Length: 144
Image (cartoon, rainbow, N blue to C red):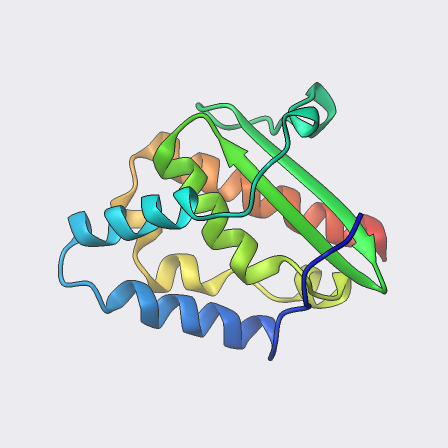
């Protein structure tokens, strides 16, 4: 499987960039729309990856997360049957995909609280977001 170019800068830099991008919008409706648009513009998630082994537990919506390692980096793709959750997955892919497993495992997801996502998402969406983050970090730990 071929991966795109590794992310530039550190994971903390990527989180800061995402935080700045989200707080740029004046209202939460604009932020939600931006997140949804991120999901719509995310790389394709092939149908053959929508298998039970890639399905994420702990989300109200159906979410599939595919990971693979290449050249010492961990790559991810994800999709959901919910537009907002696909957007949240795309947000996480921008932060985490193409990074060394150790960096993923050791860097807390501070941008989630910083952007207010933990306060402005519904409890079920917030739980799903944290489930995705926990799975990404657990996969990174497994690679160490």
